Length: 230
Image (cartoon, rainbow, N blue to C red; front, side, top):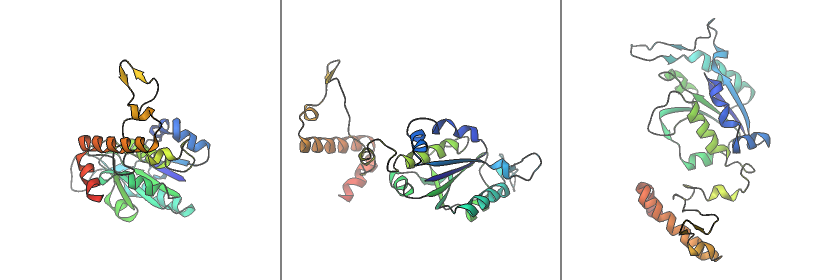
C-alpha cells in the first residue's frame, strides 16, 4: 500500500512511523509512505500557502493552488483510490472504514491547518472527509497518523498474528472483553477460572458475554445497535 500525506509540517509525521507496527510495515514493504511538504508546490517567493478569508473573520485559510498542483503531480504518476481530508466536520472514523481502506492500494491524506483549506479543493479533489473525534486539533497531522495506523495494521503480514486484528474492539460491533496474562494470581486478584480451563467453547462464551457487558456499560449506543442487528 502507498500512503501519501500532504502537510505543511512534515517533521510532525516522522515519529509515528519510526516505531512498532508502522516501522515494521515499512521495513517489510507492506507500506510505502511518502510525506509531501505542500510548501514545495507554492509559486510564491516566500512559499506562502495561506491567505485571509473572503468575507472577513479570524484565521487564515490554506490556498488552493499549492494543494492542487501537488495532487495533480502525484496523481499523474499513480491515481489515488481515495483522497482523504481530515477535518472535524468529516465522517467519524470507525472500524468498517478502516477495514475498507486497508483494501486499497494508493491513498492520499490531506492535513489541514489554520482555519482549514479552500472549499474548492474539497469539492474538486477530496473523495472522503474523515474526523477522528468531536474536537479540534491544531492541524491534521495527528489525525492522519491515527488513520494510517488504523488502516495499515490491518494489511496482511503487518501484525505478527493476523487473527489478532479480527478480535479487536469494533470488528464485530462490540468492545473487546477483558484480557489476562501471567501470573494467575496478581496481588490477590485471580485470573477467571474459565480462562485457565482450556475449554475452548466455554472460553468463547465467556468472552462474548464479557464483551456484551463491557459494551452495554461503556458504549450503550453500540450495544443497542448490536442487539438490533442480532
